[in-house]
Every structure is written in structure tokens, then in C-alpha cells.
Image (tube, rainbow, N blue to C red; front, top):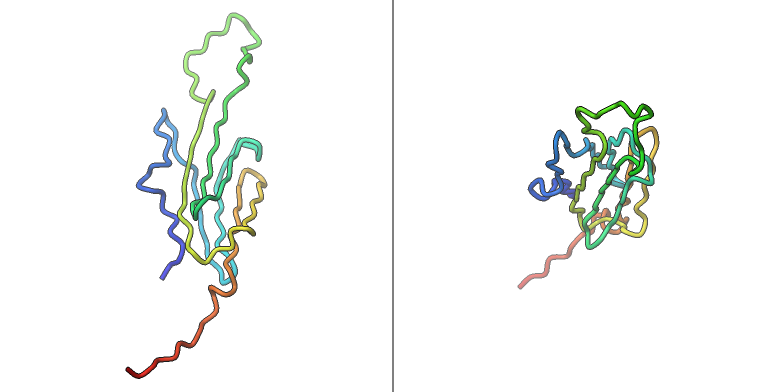
Amino acid sequence: MNGLSLIDSLLDGMDYGCCAAAPSVDVRETDEAYILDMDLPGRTENDISLTLKEGVLAIASVKQEQAGKKPADKDVQWLLRERSRSSFARRFTLPDDIDADAVSAVFKNGVLTVTIPRRKEARQERKIAIQAA
């Protein structure tokens, strides 16, 4: 049984703007933690919002060029400008065995890595006595 349901809620986190798509995600599971890696090229840690509330991990970002930025040459006219703004939001439902207070995130070389530790007591096997009726 896979304890981690990291499927977006019926694609509700997708940004359907022109040519936009949710970033790629890999999720792996160890005895100690769930680890989520998300590709976010061209963004910085300041562009990303990461929240955990009621067992749902939300990762979102809005990136847009500076409002007053203009081409150096005043004779330049934009013919197509798709890169001026991009955004996404993804939500992942986490299992009950996580340690919400110990979740951590690192952003390096365009990859966000979120480590979601598992509680030790949730991982231990316990023998259950059966009583005669």
C-alpha cells in the first residue's frame, strides 16, 4: 500500500494559461521520509510559496517581469510575449504518518526538494492481541 497520495486533486492545480503547464515532480519514499523533487527552472526560492495545512502540501509560484521593464531600443515592438508572466499551483494530499513539524525544503540549481519525515511510531509494527469472545 502506498501511503502517499501525491496526485493533484483532479488537475485542479494546473494553470491553463497559454503554453503553461505544471512543473514536473518526482516523489520517492523511504522508511524515514517522503521526498518530493520539483523542477522549477528560471525561478528562485523567493518566487515559490510552500505551505502545509490540514495534511495538504501546496506549492505555488507567480513569476512576472518587472512592471516598468521596457526594451532598450524604443523602436522595438513586441510581436509575441509569452514569458512575461507564468504561474502554477499544485496541491498534494499527504498521508497520516508524516511529521508535519519537521517538513523541510531546499532549492538548488532550479530544483525544489521537499523532505517530509515520517513519524517513527507510525512506522513501527505492533502485535495486536486477539481476545476470545
